[in-house]
Image: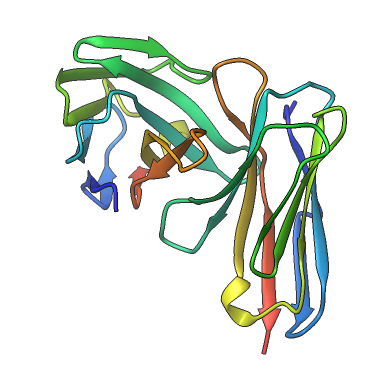
Length: 109
Length: 115
């Protein structure tokens, strides 16, 4: 059983569309992170959220941490082909991070 | 750039043989980690180290051992490789960002195939 469930598992959209991916758990996290991974490479950290209800923006990416600190979402506005990749969330209920299985995003030009 | 390199990048080995993967970092970070990534399971922690000769088990440590004799090097050994250990292995270091939060910087991975 995965501590963190991500949805959808796969997403294929046209360039310019908006999208939201989700990271859910029944556990409370002291912090939650989002990573992007490209084929053949390791994940790259995008953001860390630590406060319930927190919203962080990174250009066209908006990250939100749930009020109860059990879930998070990533919204991408006007997706571009360069956004293609595997998006992973990772949460720390204690002092160790656990990763979700990821959402594989393909943005079609 | 945190300067973390993994070697080899690809390896094919036979069942029952020992295999050692190497992770090297250049910035004196204290914490280092070994993860494996498999479809449907995401990234799972194998072992981690919090200093020279200080290591601890992660979620999926059976069949693996680690050593850290120098700050910059963290070795992962499969004592007797099995087909279930076919995976992509990632090394990571823990770094602090501008907001004083800790996050991981990952290496580029080692693709290991056990035949």
